[in-house]
Amino acid sequence: REMERALGQAVVRDELRLFYQPRYSLHSGIMDGAEALLRWQPSPPALVMPDSFIPLAEETGLIIQISDWVLQRACRDALNWPKPFYVSVNISPVEFCRDDLAERVATVLRVTGLPAERLELEITENVTLEKPDKVLRIMQRLKALGVRLTVDDFGSGYASLGYLKTFPFDGLKMDRSYMRDFPHSQQAHSIVNGIIGLGKAFSLVITAEGIENAEQFAELQAIACDEGQGYYLGRPMPAADFIHMLETVG
Ligand code: G
Ligand code: G
Ligand code: MN
Ligand code: NA
Image 1 (cartoon, rainbow, N blue to C red):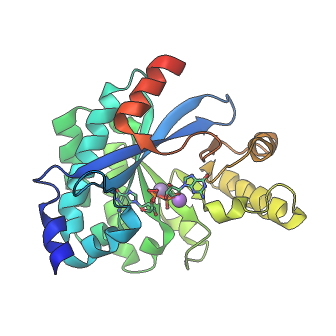
Image 2: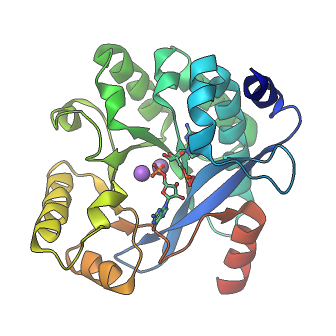
């Protein structure tokens, strides 16, 4: 297929871009990290969003090559930031089907020199459903490198909560759908409060995603959610704009 061929060339043609969305500590109110979000720019002004090419990359196996590029680019970008923020990278479940994920991450850390503590990997909970023994082994190797592992889109998958006990996660990011009626709806409030309590019981760092207004931000601070991300705090932006913002806003 045409798109498959084009995507196969994206890396060598230097058509991939990383955008960064700021993440804030809700305890201090200060920015402390950013999530890397991939875009494909086959030709300007076209900008293709990941939902329209990641599935194809996963089907064809191109995801490995693309993800190596993402990891390497993200680590290098983070070293150029004026502050030692976390950089968070999304890892596809398909990458857990192979045995070499930890080795690939180790190589990127070695080649770029980014301290492992500054790299966080986001993984959706569905990854724990298939081949749990193998996935656990890979995660333990990643943990041994010193990187942080976070559940992405928490509460949107099909996994039961038991995996929080079994798998060595450091944090969870609440799916942004939980922000929809928060904080006004009593039910939405109870669910978010419950997820925060659950996370604390497992000593997890809890991030709220999809914060879109000041009320949500203030209420999440009041109920001691650890971290926050969302359009209210900052939209995903090109790498150069992110650095510019760090240099000007501080
Ligand atoms: O803004 P947004 O459209 O960037 O992201 C849409 C989806 O694509 C999200 O679910 C996000 O996790 C995923 N995504 C973004 N960047 C990457 C990436 O580098 N690798 C993988 N596997 N998924 C990504
Ligand atoms: O699935 P994952 O959490 O990795 O992807 C994050 C997705 O959420 C990206 O597509 C990003 O652009 C989007 N996003 C980030 N903040 C907000 C927000 O405040 N509101 C909405 N609607 N989407 C957001
Ligand atoms: Mn994510
Ligand atoms: Na998410």
